[in-house]
Amino acid sequence: MWVLTGDKVETAINIGFSCKLLSHDLKQYIIKMKKELEHASDDEIKKDILKQLRDTKSLIEKNVDQNNQVKDNNAFIITGEALTYAMMEGPKTLLVMITNNCTSVLCCRVSPK
Image (tube, rainbow, N blue to C red):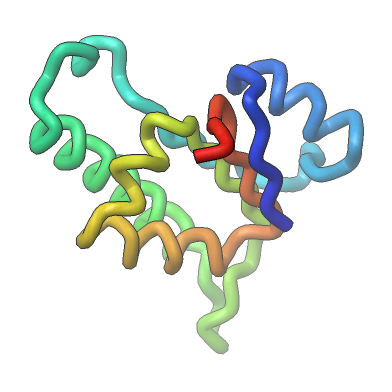
C-alpha cells in the first residue's frame, strides 16, 4: 500500500503506526535528501539518492530465502524531494524494485504535483 502525505517524515511515521500502515515487525528504510547537499547540483543530489537506493536494495536482498522470496516485511519511506530525484531515469528502476518488495510505501512532504 502506498500513502502520499504532505506531513513531515516523523509525523507521517507516527500516523503510519496509528493507522496500522506501519508496525514494529516491518523493517523501515528511509530515503531523504541530506542537509549537506542542500545547495548541491542536481547531478550530485541524484547521485546521492541513487546511492541510498542501491544501499537499500542491497539490504533488502540480504533477506531473501532460497526461493528468492523476501523473508522480512519492509516499509519504504521517502521524502518528496528525494522522490523527485528517485523518479529520474536510472534511480527509477531501483525505486520500483525496492517498492515491489515492501509491504508499505510512505511518501512524505509531497505536493499534488
